[in-house]
Length: 170
Image (cartoon, rainbow, N blue to C red; front, top):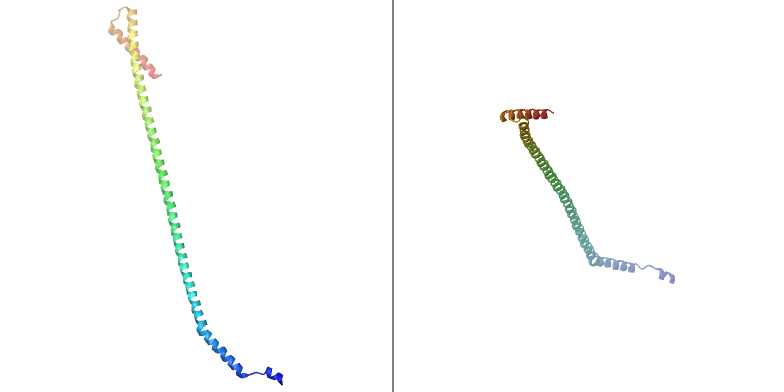
């Protein structure tokens, strides 16, 4: 029976071991588990706060990005408007310069035409006078004073006027 003593179960030892285990569990729960649980909860809160701060910062960054993009688009539109206004002003100025140049050219041409017509009329008058003088001298020599000078001059003037009218008809 010696073998049975070695294998025998001692209830008091089991109860004491269970009691020791329960006391150890309670002590560990009170002094180790609760402080560790508090530390874990505190860390979890800190992590949650950091996540919420990160979310807020992320939302702020997205809002700033959207505001920046809005401003950038507004600046692009403003720049395009300024460029378009400057191009329109330059085109208007260019058109005005061209119109002024055309007006000046037309005025110069009109003055030149008027001056040419005046010069032509003067030249015609000078030629008429020279023809009258030449023809009167010629007629004097030919007629040798058979007709008086006033009659002779009237004849030549009428002849030249007829020549001038025939030139205008052609």
